[in-house]
Length: 322
Image (cartoon, one colour):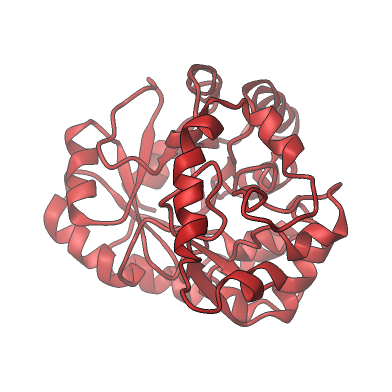
């Protein structure tokens, strides 16, 4: 057992990625935490986030994390997130501590790791380019892990994210010096995930992803790895990042989107369209029209090629445990 696992009360060296927008909620987080990993609730409007934390507490007394996406967060998010046992932050080049709880920051480079250490982070997550969702790293996860371990020299534990789908993947990461491993795509393909059933079916059927900036309304200049769908086939004919005009429009609209409450953004995302003003970062969750599977982002990492079925989260956790 690593020092980080002991400090956080983890029994297995597996963290579940905090997939936001309603994908990773109480059912998934409770299943992972209750099984000895570290379950994580993704970012939601503050009131909804508080309700999901309470729901986990009703199901398990094991430690719980909340993932806060810094560009999308408001003051209320930080207050509510600190009601969890661990706060994970994502997408901030110059991070700062905003919680008294153990704080883990996701990084994509040595410079970002050193900035997090200087800011007082208790651990960092080295996210490789093969990861799904919004991707901070530009090199493979194990390569980044090695770079970061050499730079931080044991000052904080380093967790690895990207390419984690089996116990063998986790063991390789541990042998390389990681304190634990984060898995997202494997837990996305579970009964407890709130990803739309059509989204889950695409996970089983797909073996290809693309790193793009297409779904950038509300969160521009943020590369993200997704499955191919009708929207990517329509817009990514010439440049995997997306048309320059669309990306410029998203950047121009960024200020307006950041001032729009998250609850309003999530309601707007339920429209099934794929025009330049509909390419939001919101994932496809249950209750949304089936058509949104082809108009919205289907976040997934490269390990989707190894997803063959939808299973209970407990089964996935067992298969990730060395």
